[in-house]
Image: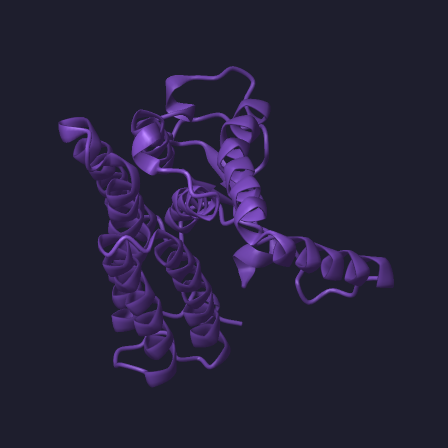
Length: 268
């Protein structure tokens, strides 16, 4: 095998229907979340963000499965993510709990939106060079999941968001800052999804779906909040001594304990 053939293939030029159709669907639900929150339908807005998350997970996988990856698709997906997981959660949080709090309210929402933009820009510049086992900073869909599940829980229990505006504002800011941090979050790309499992695992998966279906807003809130906290925990456990580079800024000299050996996911 020659060196040229072993190099990763560059994305193709052109526009492919199926993956971009899925990206458009995700963009639609992100925009729908904004419109719903403007109309006071916060539960619908939160659910729309999660639906957008599903389509975001599908478009890239479908593109790889059908060999329809393209430069246009990658850029379009990034723009759609900015709407669905940056602007939409920020405005939903603002309309639900922050609009009565003046500068603090809209600045808290802006911190989230700006952090999502920076997170996506950094991710795009690190494609092909970063350790695929981990995300650097909280991924924007996961950050959107924290905000959306919080709004969903509040709406389902008829909790007026304005009564807890400062709390929601602080949470929105913290989640935004986690996106631009250097905390390491598991990408789950080293999991062998094609591997065989025993019957107990299948049974546990069915049980998990039953638990989620019984109270999706509460379960999703627990899942996404736990994942948001997992980054600092994983980072602290992965370093000999916590430094500023492990939290924020340029992390090129950060000394993590784990080796950077390529995994099966990296090779693929």
